[in-house]
Length: 517
Image (tube, rainbow, N blue to C red; front, top):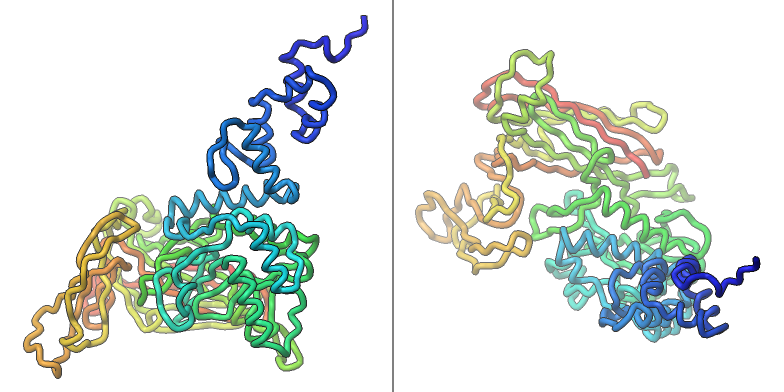
């Protein structure tokens, strides 16, 4: 008995069609009426919408609702069909970024630009006289970079909160502050033209500068027809691979890698203690990328990053390569119940610790062969001797403390207007408190000034820094070496109580981290 395909039940035919691509199904629909009717089943188009565009609702690329899955597919195919497999990859990367920023940093989420049009991308090509690769175009067709207030100002001269809302994150090392934002395609084209003009002695070829960075010359560039994504210093021709070279999808592989790192490794924090700088921190925030050690209730979390804009490749002018690394170390004293749970069996009977103070540090830095390149001893960290107290920082504190540790003039103090805190939905006044101020004559200096702000909870008295309520004390520093890999290990010496009033013996707290360029 011979069975032809049309003898099958419609439900079976529908399941067969479900295994096909939307393109193949559309071809079959032109062959005969039965197949055209099966291809019109909207549930099939729901499958293809997800398979090709990761759609879970009937919307157009503009966000406008559509009546059917089939019409939704048609709008996406019209706008993105030319980009083929790049489309789904770019959508997946952007969805990861959208979900993460919406949950953890709404300001960055709100800054993501509307889709760029094909005309905007064509205009950028004409200005640059460069053919933008499909992998770059599809990224901008989904989000046209970031729309930040600082881009309408003068970012190198004027501090603005949104300067720290760069999608690509940042860090600070003393006064070296980095926060990298993805520019709209129009601003990227203009920045590239300025770069070519400013450094006319350098042949940038078909490069496109895609990012801007706060107070530094760190930028990401796409070159060689999209086959290389590089991070560079725009002051010279130094650059490093931001993604493995090859193909013409380097920028898309870079965005996919960043989305994966963002989801698995990174968090948000204040990038610089002297500014309202809440942003994405590029120091890994989770194990195993962040090393964590606990000794007698003192927890040390350490992580490092490679700093390409301060590193040097070997050239005719440099005798040696210099790989520059920054590291972030956080100290905290665990709550009493966690101290007891982590108490080592060989540490003797458990005795709760109510405060500890840092006295000194000792770092041993090794290259990739294990040879010691630096042996660093020093008092405190960056000139400070933090005092840690146990406790749990409230998830949504009404306010925290930032203190000026230098004397200030009485005439500098004032009550500032109330301002909403967008990260915990609270409102407060910023009030300068001046205990025992005495005369307010302009010549009188004050020895202590506590200011309520949304910043880490540090109190400074007599040059001693108190970290209240279990708040970690964070410090960032740097090191460099001749090889692209290495490690740091060492000890921080703490004393129970304080240095002035010890309540127990001093002890060493272990720390370690990996250096990888």
